[in-house]
Image 1: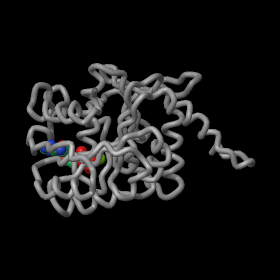
Image 2: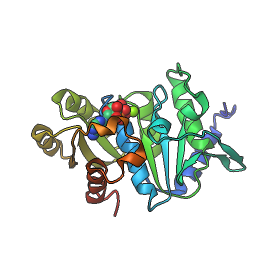
Image 3: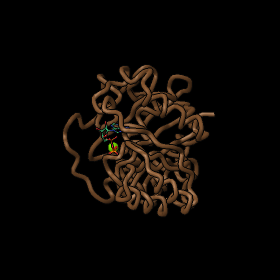
Image 4: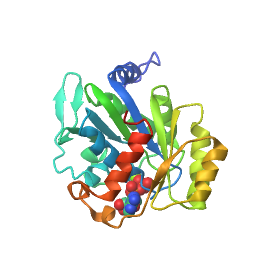
Length: 246
Ligand SMILES: Nc1ncnc2c1ncn2[C@@H]1O[C@H](COP(=O)(O)OP(=O)(O)O)[C@@H](O)[C@H]1O
Ligand SMILES: [Mg+2]
């Protein structure tokens, strides 16, 4: 704990140094779980890392899955004077609580979650990045509010929904809570199509960036096997058309 008796949290100045060294921060969020946030954020970071210096920060403290999805098989972190250097896979820099928990559960609540998120971001020396992709857990609780506070001025949020009204109704609440606190990139409908959600996006005045179908090979596909698939091409097209990649 670095909160001094003066009430100054020394991590705040470190956080602003970190933010200054990153050009764009793309946060994947949704009210719902199981809609593809981790999958799409991990694969987006993979696509970006081919042409840009990219990092990914996994903020799903209870169910971190980014190292697994990206097939990270060595969790070695290096120390430097400017902080911990995260492990890399083909140049993509990956930071997740999983690197420290290694399969163990993390029973956390309230302020300790907020503390861990600040700690994780402030200790990580990503260096200069073109893109930092952030994977959020479901819901609009501690992690979501912490991300809005830390990345609000600089980040852009993509909302992922499944093509169901149940999923949309929960995602809509997340959009409304985030509105005005962070730039909105738009909505991706994942694992199917939905004209209704397209219409709902119009009503809410948020861009619908497109839809990605359900591709059974995504579930167990290693990232290398997804190369040249229709799925990865569709995700790439959405990123190109949505000004995430310009
Ligand atoms: N377009 C897709 N086609 C097929 N399976 C998908 C697709 N998107 C995600 N999945 C699968 O759905 C499950 C949930 O995705 P995940 O990214 O973990 O969701 P979240 O992070 O929103 O909880 C995973 O098993 C993932 O492989
Ligand atoms: Mg997830």
